[in-house]
Image (cartoon, rainbow, N blue to C red; front, top):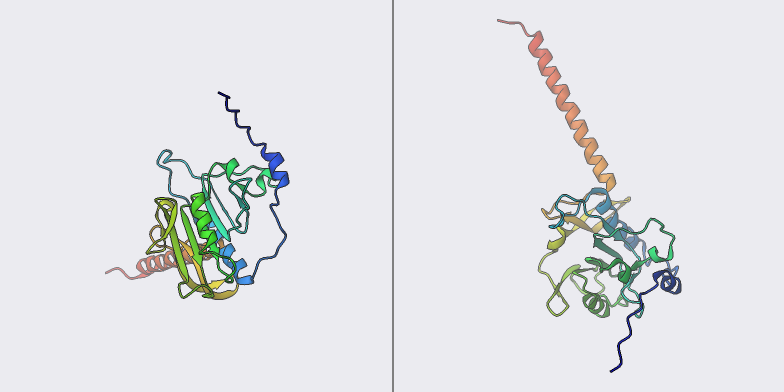
Length: 244
């Protein structure tokens, strides 16, 4: 009986040099570009992942990115989600290195937990081939945001991986294992007032952008100063009032 040959370990640097990680194509529309930023920036500005059960006191690193290729295998074409979130990931320090220019699953050891696709037209196949491939890869949550109703009346659908590696639609917008949820929010972002898809924490509180966080801090500081001023004024009145 012939003996099986040992599997050769991938030389990531060599493989990465042969892969097309950037195609130079522009984003499809300005709304999608802003929406991507709104899904990424608040996570870094205002969110802390819930602790890992095995390391409850350690801060969990994560990677949130937009329009970056996810390579599941060297034998498959990558997918380029509008946004993804992957926990417990620390990328290399050299961002210009071939092996850190994209998300290589065989190197990082896991697929992202959550992927968001923003529908711009009927050609993206978000509810067809993409849904099937993300399920085969084992992505836990797959979110489809259809702001222009290209695919139907439903604006947001959250899918969760179930038995048999099938992504099944949830009845709500929660991503329970991540301690996150989503909401449709009408407001102004980067000078544009529209309806946006935004992250909330597990209690349903909006995860703020850095700008919103600074504005809220300024409001709190201003209110605190007003309260101090009012207390000082009341104290002065007590001191100056005639004693009986």
